[in-house]
Image 1 (spheres, rainbow, N blue to C red):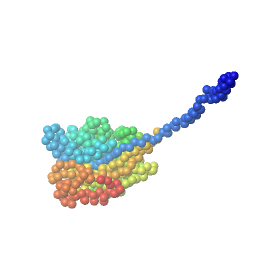
Image 2 (spheres, helix red, strand yellow):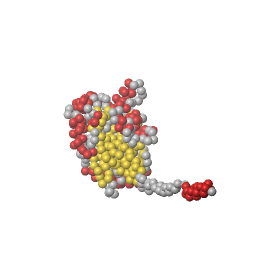
Image 3 (spheres, rainbow, N blue to C red):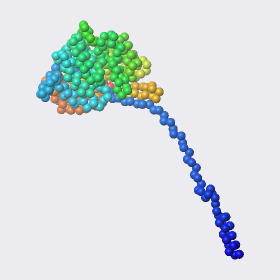
Image 4 (spheres, rainbow, N blue to C red):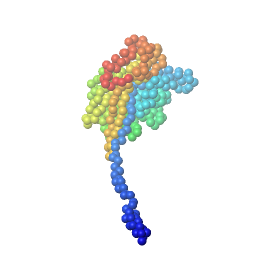
Length: 396
């Protein structure tokens, strides 16, 4: 009896503490609430290009005769102009676009000749290309120096160059005026136009296959600039104007610059005086900012005065911002000048170009131009630049 009572009590106790499977399972944790993945918002695409513009590449006989001797000494045919650009080529290699005023006719057909009617061996054009130049302005006072034959020969030469070598300023008659030279670089379309004030009194040669457009042809210029504005993200106009040897910007230059900006140009690159002149921002009729450099001065040359040894390469960034809806805005940023010095020794020997920042007092003391200008020095160069160009735009 006692054993049955004990068993009963144990059974009751076990039953009292027994739980169902549901009761014994740990409480399930609540499932995490997943936040919806945010939809990425489209952002503008920004492209930045480094641009440079260089002044008068003016090839006298002293330059091409030295190039001929260098090639012969190396056992090569033709002309070796590479030496002339060796001190500056690294900079151009670092730019996306390099513009050059090619002051003389370049070709492989005519005999080389010097002032006053120039013809330059084609090896010069190839050397300039190898140095990094890709846009060549051909409209200047020497374009007609060799008549119809010179125009045809230089056009054949540039047509033989690689496809990314672009020229502007020579037009195959009026039917060609609406053909706007455009370079596309990383999705940025840049239009190039070039005009000249005169051609040294030489009229368009009879039978010429191409011609320049003069700055007096305002209606033609306006139409071209308006077309370029419609077709490109940025419009660059080269203008060969001003007074040779003068650092003073004329009122005629200022008035024409404003018109060119109003008609569509974003940048106006001035050449011809062979010496540097000032620069400024303009406001176009539609409210756009436009920048004008009135004269970049000389680049490579064999002239004989102190101030023609001094040049200034215009540098800036092109920034294109494209919105998600496809609209875009293109602007130029932080324009400045990087000064150059054209150097040669006695009797115009070893002609080449340096950056001012690399140009030493010792080099200045050895410059052949000191024979007639004994005050030529780094200090003189700096004084010319500071008195001619707004210091806000000077660098190096």
